[in-house]
Structure formats: structure tokens, C-alpha cells
Length: 409
Image 1 (spheres, rainbow, N blue to C red):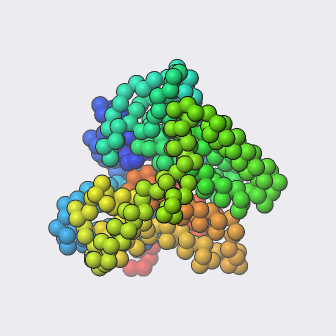
Image 2: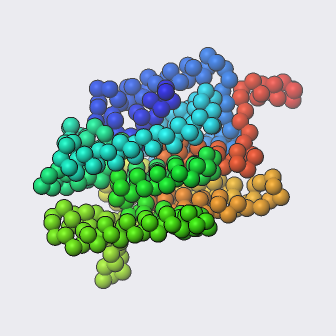
Image 3: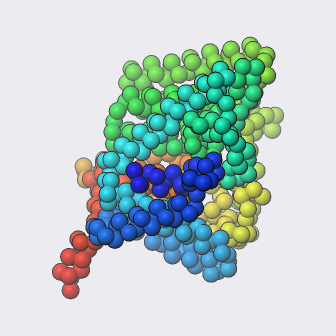
């Protein structure tokens, strides 16, 4: 409970914006201090040597960039990053991998269930916004109690909303839903959960990015069995019927839904997608990186609202080539586990692992954030699950380290 309560006060959850008197930085810092105190009192701190090997260089290099750029914003990032690893360390120590993976999936399923119910009740006019608040990016968000959203269309009888769960936008809910699917596939292996998560995410968020990713998932993984083929065909049929109905309907709501969904993947005359609002950010970030490839422009040198945005070149433009690679080191390590055949069963690569890690990369391109917070914790959970699946999970505690140090002396 303490583990998840701390995460709910962390980015990209927006409880602190919706309920500032109950959540926020002061509550988060207090909870983290409780976690640290609990770890110190019990003195059985568990960590994974691979995660430690990845995290230490990232933290050290961020300190270097702080001095090089004389940029105080790196301090805030370092604080958030260190807090992220403390929270994950606490979860690994007191909750364990099994309960952490299970709770991750069921937290996501609970959010999806509430989002679907909230979306339906809003559509028929029973549920209205309880309050409004500003997201971290400045956009207006609506609190429907069961879900938040920054995308609503008023209709004659209610409101059509794209649910965001308790995140800042619908894309974030879809993003983490796919993480839940990956953890389920690699760890719990419950096919019904995958189907429920996938269908709920489509209904709640109307995210075309998620539809594309989940279609590839069913095509490459589930379509190897008849049940997967049936599920994919039913999903396609549902979407085709839905969009055909919306096309035939000339109401403002139908036009709004189409504009937010299927119209986003319509190709313009210049070859770009109508819903593409990031490629120009990518090009600008690439230009900035070319101007300063070694150490980047620094965090204060770039502003997300100005040009950086959510694109894979932004970390390189901000922190240079080394900083960019370290920023993505968690995903690079995830790829390394699979592609370098770090396995004990005669070095064979799992087809499912290859596809899931590839699709995680596709999902990651849609929201390439590993600054800190729930994004990093989600990636760490996937890494630990994959390490255990490959029988490489070696979690050590401080007692083992002390014993080994004594023996070496």
C-alpha cells in the first residue's frame, strides 16, 4: 500500500494537480522518507546488480552535466531519478517481484475499468466533471472522479471523453496498458487478462497508436493460435463497424470522434499523417543535436513547449551523445538481454521475447520518457521479469554484500 501510495504522488500521475490538498510534493517527500527509514530499520535492502550497473553511470553523468551546463534543473531531475530507484528498491525488498508484478497489472486493470465506466456514464449524461485542473503541461484537464481526461466533446445528452485514467492524457493510459500486457505475457501468462486490458484500453482511450501496437501484438504473437486470429478479426470488425457508423453520422460528436481517431492516420498530400504533431519536433531536436553533439544544450537550453517535446532525439539534443545513450540505457539493456542470448537454455532466443521487446520499442517511440517516475519503474519491472524468465535474476541484500566483503578481506 505504501509503495503504490508513493507512486500515486509521482509523475505522470496527476492526483497532485486534481487534489492538491491530499497529494503533492510535500506528501511525496514525506512518503519517500518513510520508505528510506523502513529500509534502514530493517537493514535488508535488496537490489539487482544489473540495475545498479545501469543506474550509477546515469546518476554520475547527470552530476557532470549539472556542472558543465551550470544548470540547476538537473538537480530536480537527479532528485526524481534517485527517488525512483529508492521506491523500486523498496518494492523489491518488501513486496517482492511476484506481488509487484501482480499489483502493477491489477492497478492498471482497475484504472481501465473505472475509465470505461466513467466514459460510458459521461456519454449518457449521468457523470459530469467534478472539477477542472491544469495538467503539468498547462492544458486543462477534467476530473470525472472515475477518470481524468484532457479531451472531451460536449454532446446533446452528455460528453464524449477519451479517458486518461489518472494520468495526464489518454496516450499515457494506453502507454502503460501495453506495459501491463507485456508483464502479463512474460510473467503471469493469463490470456484473458491480455484480451481484457487490450479491449478496455481501446474503448477508454480511443488511442490509434495503441490500436496499431496491439494489432501488431495479435498479428505476431496471438495469431499463431486460432483464438488469437479470432480475437484480431473481431477487433478489426468492431473498429470497422464503429468507424463506418461514425462516417455515416453527420453529428458534431461523430465528426469530433473521427478527428481524434481514424483521421489522425489519414495521409496528407505532403506524405505526413494528419495527426502527426511530433515529426517537426524531431527534426528540430536533430538540428540542435548536430549543433552540440558532445554535451548537448542542457535542460535549461531546451524547453519542451518550445521544440523538444516527446521524441527520441530530445535527450540527445539536451545531454549530447553520451547522455542520450545513458538516458535510453534501460531499454538498450532490455534489448541486450534478448539479442545477446543471455540465457541458460543453450543460448536460444525466445520468439515471444523478441516481439514483445520490439513492440515495447514501438510503444516507447510514442512516449519516449525515462526521466523518472512511473515510466522508469514500469521499465524496471519488465527488466526484472525478463531477467527472472531467463534465470538471471540475482537480487542481493546488504547482508550478502557484507559477508562477501568480509570473505574477500
